[in-house]
Every structure is written in structure tokens, then in C-alpha cells.
Length: 125
Image (cartoon, rainbow, N blue to C red):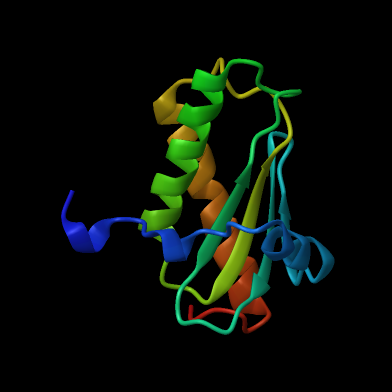
């Protein structure tokens, strides 16, 4: 991977206060039976991502890490340039689904989020 294509630390939500702000001030919401996307505009010129994968839904740490890695990768390819703070919350056990199918599922979610945001004027087409 080229250095300029990495998902840098500045593209992630780290502090619990940053997560709380997205939960409290959600402007766009995309619901799916397996996951939930919450988004709000931010004041920086790039998107920031927070991922929540609970032990309650996926018990094995290695499976949780695979999910988080795929979410970050699809975010990097699809949404990173938008000025949004986004939370990706896993709602069900995704560990039995293939990586290819998960990638398609997540990319569909990012597409739906972009469409909703563009309707409300939150992102650039």
C-alpha cells in the first residue's frame, strides 16, 4: 500500500467524548440488520471513523479484528475524503460471513450513507 493511501490516526475517532458527540448529535443514520452507521458533520476537511464491535455480538477477538479491519479499509476507499464523523456499530454476529461478502455489505452501507448525506447537503455528491 502506498503511504498516501493509509488510514492515518487522524482519520479515526479515539476519545470517548468524540464517540459521545456523534451519538448525541447524529445528523444522518443508516440502519441495516447487521450494523448501524451514525454520522455528523465535522470541522476538519476529512472523515473520521469510530468502530464499535462488542463482545456480545462477536465473541472471538480475532473475528472482531477482521471486522474492524474490513470496516476501516472500506471506509478508506469510499468515505475518507468527506467531512464527517462516522460511527460504525455492529449489531449482530458477522463472523460467519466471508470477507468478500462483508466487503460488499460494508461498501453498500457507505454508498447508502453518501446518498443520504448528499440529499441533506452534508457531502459533495
